[in-house]
Length: 343
Ligand SMILES: [Zn+2]
Ligand SMILES: [Zn+2]
Ligand SMILES: [Zn+2]
Ligand SMILES: [Zn+2]
Ligand SMILES: [Zn+2]
Image (cartoon, rainbow, N blue to C red; front, side, top):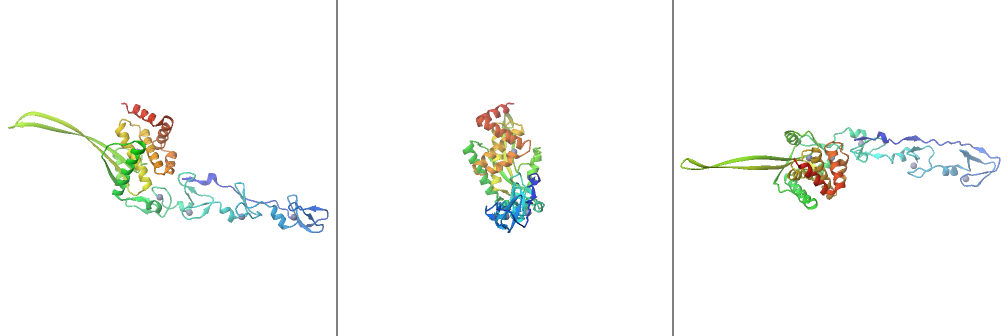
C-alpha cells in the first residue's frame, strides 16, 4: 500500500492578475487581441499592461482550460495545467475503484500503479488474495475474499488437480522441468497449511501452497526356516518417498497456476539438487519458475509482485536467480546449482 501524499498534486487557486478598468480612451489605442483600433471615447479593458476592445477579446486572451477549453478566469492550476473550474479539475483525479468517487488523495495497492482506493473504502475488509478492500465474503477458514477474486476461485479438488497436472505438462514442454514423482495433492484451509509449515519449521508465511517431501526407510527381514530351524536371514531396506503438494482452496485460477508452478519447481529441485539448503536459492528458483509459467499463461503482470517483493528470501531470491539466469543463461544457472549441491 502506498500513500499518495508524496505525489500529491499541488493545487493553487489560479488568480490572474486582473486589472479591469473601464476607462474612456483619449489617445489612439489598438486591441492586443484582435488588433483593431479602439475607438476613442469608448469603454475598453486593460489587464497586465494590455488593452482589449471588449469582454470577448479579453476572454480570448485568457489561457484555456485543459479539460473543456473554456477561458480560465478564476480557476485552478494543478501540475502546471490550468482548469476553469473545480468540476473540470476533478475529472483529472483518480477514481476510487470501489465507490467510484474522484479524489486527489488516496491509496494504491501494491505499488504506485496499483489499484486506487479512497480512505473510506480502505477502511473496509481486504481480500486475502488481491488485497483490495471490498464487501468481502468470509471463507470457511476465516479468510476474506473479494467478489472479483471469488469469481474464479478454485474450490473443486478435481478441477484443482487437473490444473496442477496441466501446469506440470506445460513446465515439461516449455522449460524441460519434470520429475516422475507420484505427487499427491490436497486443497487445504489456511489452518492446515500453517500446521504443515510449522512442522517443517518454516517461518515464511508467504506461500499459498506447500511442497512436502518425506523420506522413510522401511526394513524388511525375511527368514527362511524349515521345521523351526532358521537357516537364512535376508534383510531388505526400501526407501519410501512421499511427495505431496498442499494448496489453499479458493485461490483464483491464475494464482493457483502460479502457486502450482512454484511448488512443482520445489519438487524438481528436490529431485535434481537435493542438497541445496539455502532458502534464498530454492525459493528464488521456485519464484523464477512461477514467473516463467505466468509468462506462458499470459499473466506477466503478476510478476510485478515478485520483482517488488521485499522479502529477503522470496524477493531477494527471485531477483538473484532471475538475474543470474539472465546473465549466464539457464545452463549457467544449473551449473551454479550443481556446485551448490556438492556436499
Ligand atoms: Zn479586440
Ligand atoms: Zn473547464
Ligand atoms: Zn472509495
Ligand atoms: Zn480479491
Ligand atoms: Zn516455496
